[in-house]
Image (cartoon, rainbow, N blue to C red; front, side, top):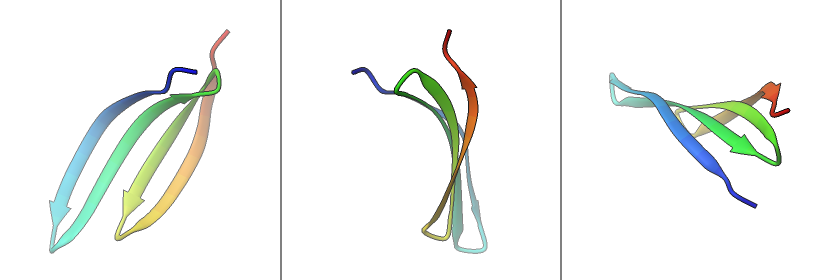
Length: 48
């Protein structure tokens, strides 16, 4: 399966890195954010 990762934004603020990615995984889009080594993910919308 193909995994498509789109980097939306990356912020460096007070030695804290924040990254937001849009990832296509298993026919669905997920919005993934990373802040201080903590990952959060959100299902955005399925690929029809």
